[in-house]
Image 1 (tube, rainbow, N blue to C red):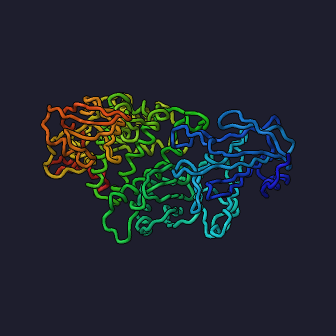
Image 2: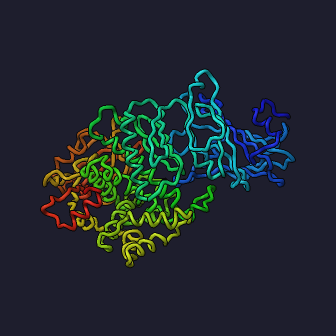
Image 3: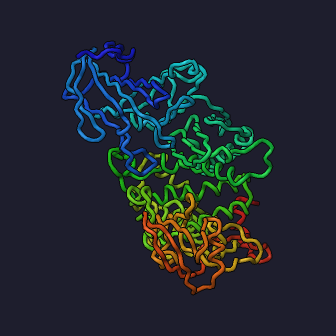
Length: 621
């Protein structure tokens, strides 16, 4: 039967085409969260054109199967239906045709994250991996993309922002864009709807941020701080390899995330993290937001241009493994907050507090003794991005521990070169030898480059910190900077350490040895820590605590109730497991020393070498 009501784009497929493939995307039904895409392939494969959608998005290493959101798909040639055969979960083959192939499909978009696609009556956001079918065999050819506004009375107030090069667009940004390849196309996310915006220049190159969602903020403060942070990163690498940059920021009540792209980034932040007008000192939330922006901007070099060889050749239909994520994410995580203090956006104590929290996160993961950061990198697909209730006991974050390894490498390079060189020089060499030349980084290149920079064999360092599971010599590393370091027991579940306050090391108190939350009338155990009281008692993740020693327990009073008992005592606990009431004997055990505190040692207690290194590290003269 003849298909009717094709869009103008499909009718235009009968005309000669300037581009091998043309995409037209329209928010067809914002209330139903549907994007409609029409793809015209001018010269389809004579044997039958294959079309596919990626299974994962670069920068987020988990199979997400974006094709599952295609709710309908059909094809035609010169108005006549063309059969589509599905070959696997994300690939179709059209029957051979003698003219241009038109494919129309609908994508359900209700993933409010930086990785997918989202559409409602207020805005639309998408990554190309969620909406643009790949024309197999024509990936390296140029493409035309028509981005249309939705229908309805409110659509005329919508604006559009993307880093795709514009061909012919209206003042609001809707119209035609071009991409030099499919890889380029899917590396330029799009935001459309009602948004606020601000801008600043770095090296005479325009930088723009658009913020969607209900929010109030100080645009001058954000512009001023981000300009300094971005300029710092550009100066570190010695050049800014782009013409313009775009921050796409979705502002929500509760959320956090970022994903790097070639000339842009997609961000998700809480509205309370944005700076209000008149703010004198940066709040914790704003420091977190600046760190997020800094992290994704650093990726402009480290990941998007300096990248593992396997990612240069990546097949987006299946996993691509590398042991190097500890460097590409860990080094980035080291520099994101370091840039804040080096530019004066935060004070040294603020920065030490951030590092202390990173140390605490690592020390509270006994998985650090079982999994190296190289293994964590390799297993990102199946373990780090698919964490379960046992994750703290089984794995380590290549972000957190990777940042500490980067810190250690920084101190080692300073030691071996008499403070002439540091990790800054390593990153510049990495850019010059790999990023600038578009040369992929192999699994051993980082260790070899670090040894050349240090003019010494650093294999023992990499064996210990990257491929091993022994404890990192953090106290020694901090000591070379004149920074005090200690571990103390946590005061409560919300205590993640920070800057030391006097000599107070916190007296150890009983701890349940689990992460928990209030759920209705119960305290639900979320994760059980190895060697802790809960595990010794036989409690498990998912158990719902009712009482402790005959008293009703809540997330608020749990710590206090436990604190009434001495170490070695046994406490009777009632809990539901599934729908069965159980009784457990909980041993009273003291909280472990896993909470980090750091502080700047007084100058009178430091050697000239320590002070000089500390000033250089923090960029303080």
